[in-house]
Length: 250
Ligand code: SF4
Image 1: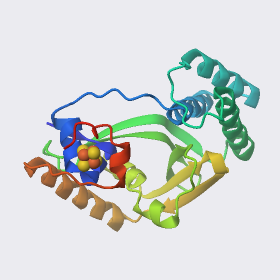
Image 2 (image 1 turned 180 degrees about the horizontal axis):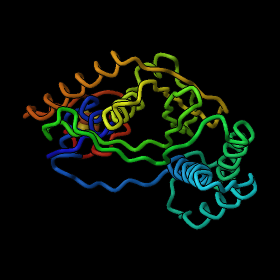
Image 3 (image 1 turned 180 degrees about the vertical axis):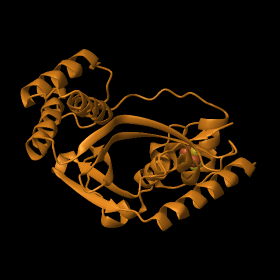
C-alpha cells in the first residue's frame, strides 16, 4: 500500500515520467546539496528549537538561538555544498540565516500570540477508511489561537516572494489542512500561514469546509489516476532543466 505525500503527488502532476523514475523504478541519482537547501535546513531547525523549548516553558533568548544556529551551521557544513553565486561566501549565507532568525524573533517575541501545539508534526491519514488512499504530511508548526483558530505555519527561505496567484495555486498547505482535519475532525477553523523569512512578512489564508472536501475528492481522483497509469509519459517543460533525471530521460 502506497502512502502519498504532497511532493509525490506534485511530482506526478509535473511529469509522470519523472514520477516513474523516482517512485516506481526508485532510480537513485545523487545530487549536490545546494547552499540554499542547507540554509533552509538550519533555519528550520533553529525555529524548531525555539518552539519545542517554548512548549516546555523554556524561553530562548535571541543570542541563544543565534549561537545554536552558528553551532549547527559549522558542525554540518561541508565544502562540497554547492554555491552557484561565487561572489557570496558561506559566511555571507550564515549572516543571512542569522538575519532571518533575528527579524523573526524581533517580530514575534514574546511568542504569546498563539499556543504552539505541535512542531514538525508528522501525520498519516486514510482518506476513505479502506487503506486505499493514504496521505502523509510534515507540518512545520501547528498552533491554536484564543479565538479557536488552528494555524498551520510554514517557513520559507526562498529568494522570491510568490504572486497571489502562486499562493492560491500552492496546494501544499491545503493538503496539510486536509490531513489535520481528517486526523482531528473536531477542528473547525483553519488558517494557513506562510512565513517568508527573507522578506520578514507572512501571508495568511483561510479554508472553508467545502474547499477541504473538494481537495479530498481531487486527491482521491489523482491517486486513482496514478494507480491506473501504465504509460507514465514525459511532460517536457522548463522544469526539465532542474530535473535530476535529465541525463537518462530520452
Ligand atoms: S527531464 Fe523533463 S521530461 Fe524527462 S523526466 Fe525530467 S521532467 Fe520529465
